[in-house]
Every structure is written in structure tokens, then in C-alpha cells.
Image (cartoon, rainbow, N blue to C red):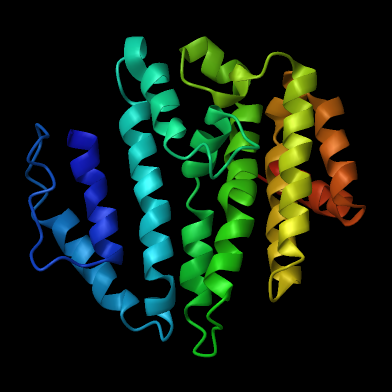
Length: 253
């Protein structure tokens, strides 16, 4: 309950309550000087200034609620964690029949969809159908691709430290690559349906370039999989990949 109560502060930032609770009431540490409560309230006050925020609020709350749920289940005792994550997914499985439970969990761990909804709500000419279009593109596809790539490059590190890694649930590297390519394919397909699709396309391709340029990919012998994904995304990703490599050598990225 401590994790759930802490993450309630993010929901309240998106949908301000009449009064703000003590978010640390199930936690051992409470003396933050009122910082978390003030941050949640200030965020909510600022979001009211976005001209089309009312059109995206419900979708933002829905996605952030999934994010909070994931944090709760992800930090449970190892003996029950997987069981609870699977039970959680079963509530949503009919809406997402094409993905595994760990892929749903991975997608829930990304806040890209919320950021995109908030950014779009700054447009006073925002069309009523756009929030749904953004959510369909970002969840589970772009959000899932985002976090699966993160776990993909951290496989060895997480294994050493015995940390949860959703990519480890694939039966073999071939299945892992097949599913990553599927998420990439769906992401590219969905962004083409969005207004300002070039911007969203840049995000998808940028995720590939940023994550797959990490030296951890080569150290784990995953370069062949990385290049398969890069080639699928298009020739322009090659340049983005090389640029990210340069930034890493300069220790900027």
C-alpha cells in the first residue's frame, strides 16, 4: 500500500482532489517538508493552463493508474510478484489479446503516452478524436517498445543483480527479436495514422537509435538483433544510430 499511496500523488497531479492526503502514511519516512504534496498541487495548477487539457485528462489518469499499479506489483515479494502481475493483466487481456502479460507490464512502465497527451493538449485546436488516436499508438505499442528496449539492453546486468527483466520471459532470443519487431511494426503502423506523424515517427526511430547504440548491446552479443530492428525501421535510423554512438563517445548520452 505504501507504493500505491505514493503514486497517488501523480494521479492527483492530473486530477486534483478537494484535499491532498498524506502520501507517506504507509511509509516509514514522512518528513519531506510537504514537498510531494506541494509538487502534486503545483503540477495540477499548471495543467489547468493547457487549453485542451480537459480532452486528455481521463486518458492521462488511465495510463498513469496503470503505471502506478505496475510499480506496486513489481515491488512485491518475489514469491508472489509474478502471480500478481499475471492476475493484474487478466483484467485487461480481452482488450489486448495480441500481447503477453510481461509486454503489457512493460508498456505500463512507460510514461511516453502521458507526455504526448499533455504536449498535444497545449494545442487549442486539438481535435476530439486525437486523444484516442494517441493512446492507441502509444499504448501498448510505442510504450511497450520503449521499455522492452530498455530491458533488452539490460539483460545481463539484471541477471547479475537478480532484478526483474521482462525480456527474460521470452523463451529464446529468436522469440524476443520476433516480438520486438512486432512492436516496432505496430508502432510504425499506428504513427502513420496520427496528425503530425513525422514527429511521432522520429520518437519511434529515436528510441531505437538511443537504446541500441548502447555499448551493452555489443558486450552481450546482441548486435545482430539490434541491426535487424534498425534495418526494419528504415535507412534514416542508421544515421541516427551513428549520431547516438558519437554522443556516447563524447559522454553526452
